[in-house]
Length: 208
Image 1 (tube, rainbow, N blue to C red):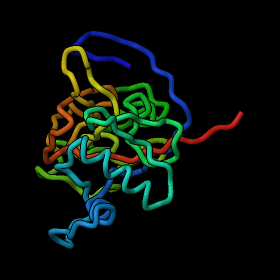
Image 2 (image 1 turned 120 degrees about the vertical axis):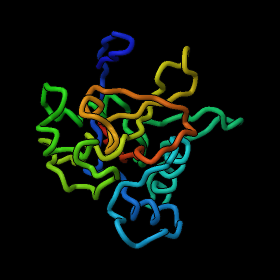
Image 3 (image 1 turned 30 degrees about the vertical axis):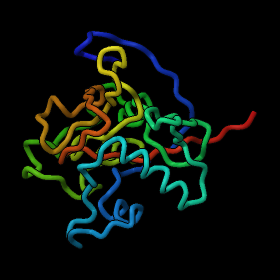
Image 4 (image 1 turned 90 degrees about the vertical axis):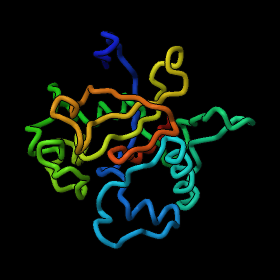
C-alpha cells in the first residue's frame, strides 16, 4: 500500500472475503431502499450521489433482507460506526481488500490497457456508463478502475482529517492518472457527488 501525497508505504493483512463483480447499480439501489426510480432507462449504470453514511445503512438493510448478520453498529450517540468483520452480512471493502482485488495479481498501476478496462475522461462521454461493458480484471471484476469512484471502509488520516473516509478507483470524470490501483482520495462521510458510488463485500467465515 502507498500514499503518494504523504510519500508513505505500508503493508496490510487481509482475510478471505467476497467482492461483487460490479459496482452497485441503480436497479439494485432502488430494490434495496424501496425508492422509486426516476426513470426506467439506464438502471444498469452505477448508483452515484450516495454518501458513505448512506452506504453503511444500505449495507445493513441488505443484510437484514437476506437474513444475514449486520456488519455495522453505532455507539449510543450514533457518532461512531463499528464494523464486525466476523459477520457474514454485506459491507464495504477495506481499502487493502479493494486494492488486492483490483490488482488481481498484476503489478502495474492498472491491470490492463485503460481504454479497454475503464470509462474515464477520454472515453466516457462525460457520464457514467452501464456496468460490465469494459474488460474485467483477471479475477472477473469489472469497473474496478473508472466509471465511478468506490467508497471504502477506512478512515484516511484521523489525526489530520477526522472522520474523512477513503474512496478508490477513479471515475468517468478523471484523467488517466486518476484511474489506478493505488490512487487514493478522501472526503467527509456525508459527501456525495455524481462520480462516486460503491461496491459490496462480505467476509468469509473460516473455522479452525
